[in-house]
Image (tube, rainbow, N blue to C red):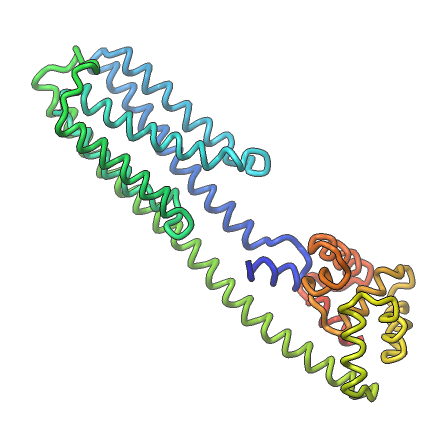
Length: 330
């Protein structure tokens, strides 16, 4: 991701903005799960108090444990990241079949079918249309098939409530309609908040992209100025770039010839810099970015980032300053 690459190049620190977006989004998921927990808990209490259906009330109470489970693992993304998304999918599908069950259980006359639409509107919050189009289509298909099947088939093998009387359906239907509307409004609210987070991330990325462009131009200008000061010809420039890209042992020697005062000036800032750190500083002096340094030194990007971070600490470079720009000014 350009955003991640840029931020690490600028400050050599973890991607705080990206982590903040993920933290805020997970916090939204947590709030949504709290809503589902309270909804199921209310239903279980309502059914046992007004209809005396202890079996279904117990069933709904057990379902609330799923929301507690997801809330428990959502904060531990480092350890449970792999099971978070499958768990959400599982619970989502479970909700669909629970809705179908209660639709049949209440003789298809209690307004439970309105919750199918609440589930449909919840899809954009939990899933990404661009990254997971097939999964979204499958979820929408499962909801549609359940809705149509419950509409046209009797499902006589499923139990029916013995606690509902004819007049009771009006109360329950009104309750289900109100809660389905509330769920719809909650879905819209959370989708809007998710969109605001994404929009904010896009704006931040655009700002960072613009900044890195300016920094690259500044770095190029500084490098050209220093090369002119050192009377480097075009052939000299090509030679030193070629040696650096091929990871030649001659690069560091040639570099000191072309930039005779650089090593002494950087050691004046911190004489404890070791050879490998000075070598990295030389590569940054010719404006190699993290990816380029990793390629020419046969290192991983993570290893280069760690090395640059240690150099930053040793040279006391402020976190908000680009390390390449600092090196170029030496």
